[in-house]
Image (tube, rainbow, N blue to C red; front, side, top):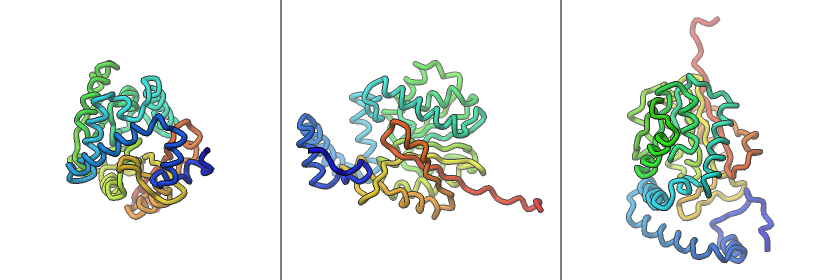
Length: 267
């Protein structure tokens, strides 16, 4: 009894999907019930989605920091980090870029960015103090302390403490896939301020071609046009990155840029 729909047409929140999935994966029923119980507990105790997801990350990181950022094994953690790094390298990342990584986690890709960039040019932020402690361990393990990366804990994505027009590259991998639309809107509204003229912001998301939905407030599925239109409302030009789709990762990617201001001296 296989699902007749392609992945981007599946509604993982529907009862039909849940029953079919349970029938095909009976060994995963207990884990899902545990997630449902955790969801209720955290939802009651949390004032907003950021507080809710911070609790999720605390719980997941306590078990395994690498699985907390979506890696089933250390080998997969390395492979996904390498995939992100290689893609940005092929799409314009230079050593003199000033990079902001939103949701840097335990530096799955971040340690490679830090190694590639000039000293002090990497700034990673995350809502989880627990995963940032794991990020410090990654820095030590990879011998990157002398590259002087910045790691900061945040409570929202307003980016108020960061300088305007500073970052030439902003990167968010597997952040919007865990965010309701209001959080994404907040992020796009404020990235525009810290992004340097001519810079770009790459983000991944869980794509659906059907009804937009979420699963236990941890996984959110959006249509491409929803996010491109939202970006355009904030003055960005948005482009779906087709070549990312060919890589072995379950999320899609959009790049947004803001047109450089015209030079008044140019004829």
